[in-house]
Length: 484
Image 1 (tube, helix red, strand yellow):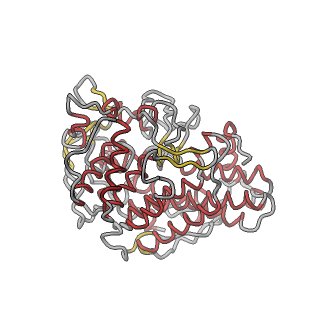
Image 2 (image 1 turned 180 degrees about the horizontal axis):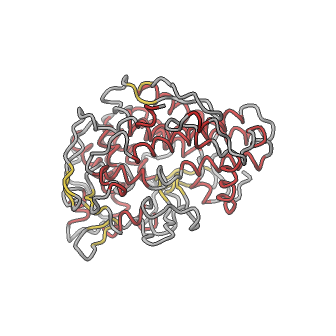
Image 3 (image 1 turned 120 degrees about the vertical axis):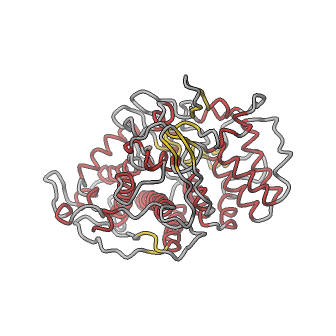
């Protein structure tokens, strides 16, 4: 694939110049704004008229997904703030105190910004898909590749939205969820969309991922491209997340088995590409970022592209805005036992006030260039383990669970919590909390299992528990969306 990573952000800037009105095509923007085209904009026909301009649009798609309000930082922080692993120091709503204490409403800036940015990424995807449907400007294989990347970004954006704003699938799959916008909008209006059901949104997500898997390449030419652009394994991996969120464990098993063997060595090899657990967890967060464990990562390589202070992961965990809740996973023996030899213990540090802090993301001064791990191979193994246990394949579930634990503690043997189906599932869920802490999984994991969001305390006050029947169990539909 003809892709120059050094020109990645330059191309992204060009993409926003070529189609500067795209970001406005969302609920929350008035029709007058939507109909006002800046003087610097050019037609979509021109924007897709050369291979270089088409590539700029593809780059712009990834740039939108990496927006600081989405996976560039804040969306991950929000999913940790709503859960119970972290307490909050800062009572300022600009750092998400109202997210942490469960008081944010439909008019909250963050509720509106996540929705707006995700739908902008979806619209970028739609415009690209529409304009590449019959183009002859690039080769047919490259055209299919680009469309598949757009479908992947559309799918992960919709998955992020449906997990945040809609009732969990297991709670009510027929409930209204989100508007399914599947055609590009470049002129304004088109705001009066009916809300599709939770089930229908998941059907579209999985349709996009099946089609993306078919047309994505097995790999790219460099490690940075394999980590930062969607390839076949990326689509498969995201399907395991989506099916797990649905509770369709048989499909999790069938998809995960494509990229995770049932016995050691647990690795996926396709040509020159290998996905596996890094031998040392410190490598994943030690600045390498694009090793074999990285299935999909957001790269930040320069100060210009890095998120700002409030959005970056490092400052939120190390300044700190968030510190470990003593009643959360930090109390597990992996972190708390003085005899623990688990390497993940080294990812926790103690500050001068005695607070335990997460040290996965180490860039605590500008520029905040920690890469953001969106999908790791460890997650897929744990998805597979949980689904195998749910399907009563306890030996396989134990094997996969042990693969993750033994990467960080080679001598550890599970002697309790792995005999019956229920206790094994509980142990796997605990291992998810240990392995994926701080990466934005806690709230989605609670919601997909329709579990109460636990109460917690911190220097910012008290956050009450939120029952699945409560009106604020999921985020409200943003006020801007309802207005338009």
